[in-house]
Image (tube, rainbow, N blue to C red; front, side, top):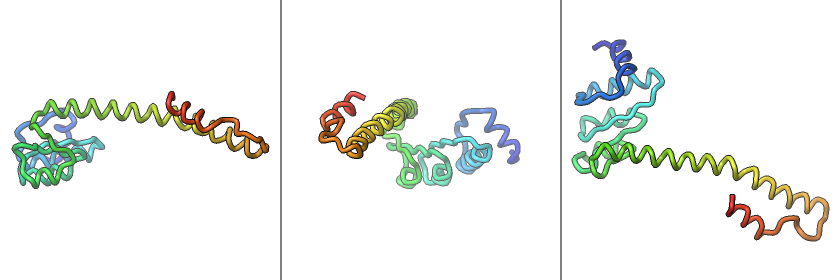
Length: 141
């Protein structure tokens, strides 16, 4: 299969099974040339180059070699592909929660900081917002 045919194939199909190690590396390179994110699974020494080249290398934990584990970003402890799906779902939940915190928290912290700053600038005896109020607003938001 030529490089151009490989590029067309990787854009047409989502899963490649039972690929030899040299084809795994070609698949990863073809996907990356198409500006796609490539994930590759492997368990042997011969899979290490493809695992290293992929954006997300996944090694088998039980049956995999140490070389494959070292070359990958993620190791499946139970060698079950359903674990990948669960990990992706969990990662998306974490990312969504982090985004929510980063969207909501900075404006609140800026308002608190500006309140204290204006209190200092205008020479108020007491700060407009106490430290316990800052902690409480961070707790509930």
